Length: 442
Image (cartoon, rainbow, N blue to C red):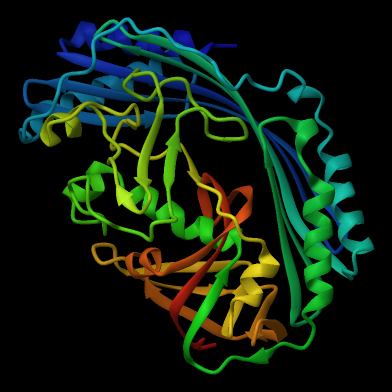
């Protein structure tokens, strides 16, 4: 079995032989376990092992990136050769910074789960199913995925590092009839800490509570965003905080810190490593140690996310968020507020409580205008009380406007990561005024 360290050594040797000015190689071995279920029964128990290596080369004012999934030396050598040839025949780029010089020292603040290989996917999935059915669901579907990866990085500037991480995620939907459904999520870096019963129970309870939903009248509402939905919006803030997004005109955030971008009760931090953060890393793809970066504090923009090249162009330092293409967030944390769900409902005269969404699409990344389709458990709120279940509507608004219209933030938070939220996000429930709701077109 070829180790990630050997994969990057092949890249290094080929890059030196060809005469590249610099190289950056990141190799990853991933072991993924899967349990999928529908109609209350397990349908797939699967195990997947993959290896890939990403290669970054420079020569003069030219650079190029490529990825291959292979542990064959000839294939890796061929990739490096083809990248080098393509780079030499390509056009020169604008100025970019050299790779950071090593060596660096790294600290593992969130150790991997040493019991990963003993994790019983079928048993944990069944516990989630049973909890949902006991809470009132008639049908249950979803997936449970575990990931264990080993990573090795080497650059031509004297940087070497290795990392090993684990994560577990459950995504479960419960149904009571055709129109009633609820959703639950559990995320953890430790298998034994994964609360599958809690996620299943929540999905079942919500499905049982929202039978026979009614249509919502289009208009402007106060919306209570459940933490799953709010995490989806916060992830967009995280990617808008990438200096690359700002340079490319794909960000609704200003290019310089100091501007008020949200209400005073909103703060957001990106963590390279944090307990519960499923994408924790001790170093970024340039080999720079990761850290925690405050993006927004008290509603004021504090920093963007940088790699070495964007840092030079913005006159600052890298934040340890480099991908091989662009800087990006690792694990996002929204600071907790001081309100309960019940208090936020009581503070709402005319609103909607939404707990899940999908198909979030942006009309403009520059202005942050977007729309999304709520699904599963949703309730109309009238005069401080839940009135009746609702469905068939779309939220159409702008994230900058919503950030500045946050009224209350929940004191309880959960880690959210699933196929609508790729960046792990520790999110609360949030009450937002003045949200435009339209009728969904079927």
